[in-house]
Image (tube, rainbow, N blue to C red; front, side):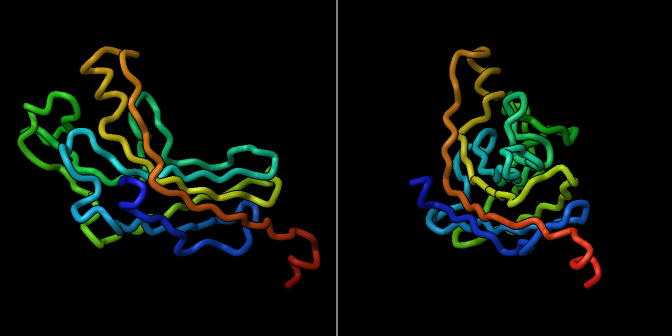
Amino acid sequence: MLRSAATIEFLESPPRIRSGEPIKVSLRVSNTGAGHKLPTGFPEGREVWVDFKVVDSDGREVYRLGAIRDGHTEEGTKSFKATLGNSKGEVVDVNVWEADRLLSDTRILPNGHADVEYAFAVDGRVRGPLLIRADLYYWAASQHFVDELLGKGKMTVDIVRMGSVSKEIQLASTNSTERGR
């Protein structure tokens, strides 16, 4: 059911990439089949996020945002979730009985969508073409949350890939003819 709840697609990406120049890629995540906010359920754990990667032809990762670090999605990840807080406005992610407010809610409404943007540059060491891939993932609770509740290493959280898009983008030529245009 999770795999039919959402779609991910490219909105904007450059036809070619030139090393050192800023690159912008836009994606749209749409709630196409959930019938409720995506994700729904208890807000202290459920999260949908985009793991965005750029890999060169040698298999070297040249940019990534959306990895799991220390049991959480890394800071800056484009994610969709409700974030609970306490009376001081601090994030509450384990002791949910301390929560008395909703700090943010980036969940996607039924039949709605969210647009996310990535801005990065690649250096002269990259070899083209580049593969840009965006995976849409879901977990019912973060690994950090489960480790706090049950003890580290007692259970591994299931991560479901809900969708994926990818495209190859060529590197722009840097020869003198191209520069003179």
